[in-house]
Length: 442
Ligand code: G3I
Image (cartoon, rainbow, N blue to C red; front, side, top):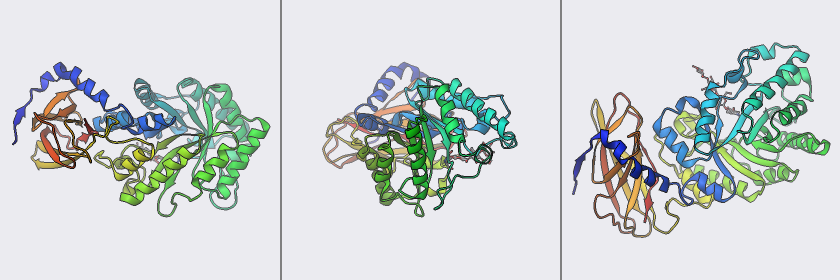
């Protein structure tokens, strides 16, 4: 039976306390990526773009699931120092403030890289380039001193292929091999507490490129050049799958006395194959005690740099993919929400649609045990508003954008049984799908 209940949205503030207490409940135990990773002594992060921080579904997914962020582009040289010695930290600061307000860790990316480098830098002669490089490192690290747990000091300095040679870049070509050492020494002075990483791609398995990086790190450790960590970007697809010696490669670096981090993970594909690859990456990290954390290169497929390859853990509607469940499971977590045996899952589908609104339906399904009650959240993107709900009892956060839904009456579901609730979203010009949070059962 369906009961229709209209809501007066102005009352949302009165219900805020209830809504918030329920929401905090969804983050307990190991029902999220961040919490599950934390139980293993690791972080689980995402690359974040400042221009998406106004999107409620993006932010709620980020805040619920991740406990570390990497600014995707906002700390790069062209973003912070497009004009010499004139620093603009606005966009990067937005990400840092958001992360700090949620207690998330922050990775700094990146200080010295041949790409996204302003033309004024590449035009400098050697002595001036050295001054500019050291000034850039010092200014940026000083601005964020104490806030960044690890910095990608130098990014992608080696060539692809079998040569093991350095990549041509203004730094390499004008300053020679010593530029990496100089960058790390400058970085250590600027923020002695930050972990200093070398970060690269196609170095995930044992190959000529990763061996060249390995030899660099070995040399640095032998000579006391400061280096604390190596980042393995881990951008995978069918042409470049997860290497079979991934774990062994991480381990050989760890054995040099540095931490290893998976810094830009994404795996093109879908379904079980993608899920299995993700699971293998997580297991490899967990098997290496110095693998301190994993960052995926984006929150949702729709904003990925490889969007057409759907390489991330949440689809374009922020629904959890099979890859998400595989990662959570590999981390030792569980989608049951309460950490016990009671479990449920949720799925969203759009129903009727009109010019100014659409109806959504969420189906709640009990896991392999009967449940006596359930709760989940639906987040809409401002200026959208939920104007009506049916077959559930909603409460709201203070913004009115996050609805926590509980059963309307008896919440009992037999093992595997389903129920559903519905709601109307007034689009106010935005037709984005709502985000449905995880399901918590007891
Ligand atoms: O912000 C401008 C926008 O104003 C303009 O209209 C638009 C038109 O092209 O470009 C926008 O900038 C783009 C930027 O992403 C922000 O979306 C750049 O063109 C685009 O080149 C840039 O791509 C980034 C890429 O690095 C640049 O090399 C990707 O977002 C970012 O995911 C990617 O990240 C790199 C890591 O830093 C290093 N490892 C590889 C990884 C993937 O390529």
